[in-house]
Amino acid sequence: MVIQNGSCVIVMLCGIKENEKSTCFEYWPQKVGTSVKFDDITVKTIVIKTMKLHSECSGKITIRISGLAIMVNDVFAQAVDHFQWVDWPDRRVPPADLTPICLLNYIRKSRAPIVIHCTAGIGRAGTLIMMAHILETLAKGAKPRNSCEILKRLRRERAYLIHSDAQYLYVHRVLLEYFALKGVISNYLADRVAAFIDDYERAVT
Image (tube, rainbow, N blue to C red):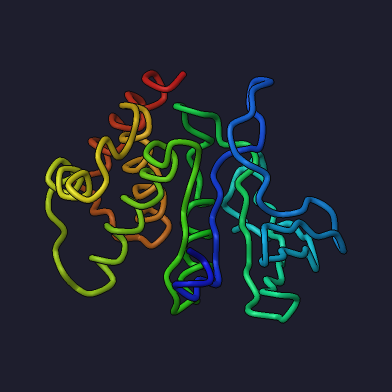
């Protein structure tokens, strides 16, 4: 799929193992200089580094970037950046900071299709995709629909997208954090935003 679509970025929002259970096939090597082979396709890890996050981020989240070389019949085909969010808990949410925004800004540089996955491809992946959809709508100068309508529309393309209430609320909590940083939240909304944040913290803890 990556080769067919010319994808240069993969975003993985889960671990290989979670709670002592295998949750994702290890389709890329974990050590620099090592390779894995699938028939005529070879995946080699060239470099591994940790993504630098915004100063407003909590520092509790780790995103690992692996630079991969993809070869077909031992001939170089393309380079891929593999982003792994290593500590996003399944069916739950990470700290509500600007990490998703940093990640989306980073991967948006790619003009090729981007692969985003978790375990089932609906919970954590759906959360990031909904966030990206809203931000891209705003970037185009368009007014987004209300959140329920956006989710319904996305679910027509991927059934059951966003797995839990907490993930749905997390989308809004992160966007509010971003809008506050940009200074676009009106003063008359401050009390409502503060009330939502209080309700959010009670809901996810």
